[in-house]
Image (tube, rainbow, N blue to C red):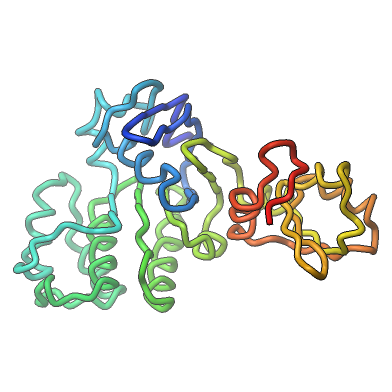
Length: 295
C-alpha cells in the first residue's frame, strides 16, 4: 500500500505547547482518523502538513514530495475542509464556486453539481443564510470537486447534528470506494470514526500514542469490570488506566490475555469504544508506574 502522507520526527514549539517528534503514515485508499482531545496537537499537525506553519525539526512528504518544495503541486491534489470555513458571506454558492474553480486546474463542474444535489445544497442561496451544517457540506462539496487525491478535514463534524454528520460520513465512504482517494479526518467525535475509519492515529499532549489499523486497536484493548478485591499492586500494572468506584472498578488493558488468565470469570470483559480508550489513557492513565489509580 502506497504511503500518501509521511511525517517523520516532526516537532514544533509555540508558547506553552510542543509537538514532540510526531511520526505516522497515511495509506492510499483509506479513511484515516486523527483523534485526541482539544489542544492535543491535531490542528497544529494539520497546519504543518498544509505548510501553514513551519516545523522546528523533522520532515513531511505528501505524494512522495517534500511538502514545502512542492507546495503548489501538492495543494492542487488536496481538498481541505476547515472547522471554520472562510467564505464571502454575501455571495451565493454558485458565485463562490466560480472563484474556487479558478484555483484548481482539474476543477470538475459536473462533479460539483452532483455533490450539490447529493448534499441538498441550493446554488442560488447566499452563504450568509446557510446553517453551520450547510456551510460544512458546501466546503466538502468544493473539496471533492477538483479530483483531489487527498481530502484533509479538520473537525468537520464538530457542532453538527447527527443527521448532517451521517450525510457527511456517507459521502466520505463513497469517495474512497475506488481505492484511489484518501481521507485524513481529524476529530474529537470518535463515534464518527468508529463507523467509517480504517486507520486511527491518537495524539495526546503533542505525542503520538498509537497509529494503526482500527481493527487492530479493538483487538489490542479490552475493557474489564470487576470487584476491587481483584486489584493489587501486580494486577494494576496490567492496565492502561483504572477507575475505581464504591461497587468495583473498570479498567482498560492492552494485555487482555494475561488479565483473562488471572481473573477468569470473576470479571466482565467488553470491547471498548475509541472514546473509552482515549478517556482511560488520558484521565485514568497509569502514567507513573502503570499501577497508580486515578480517582
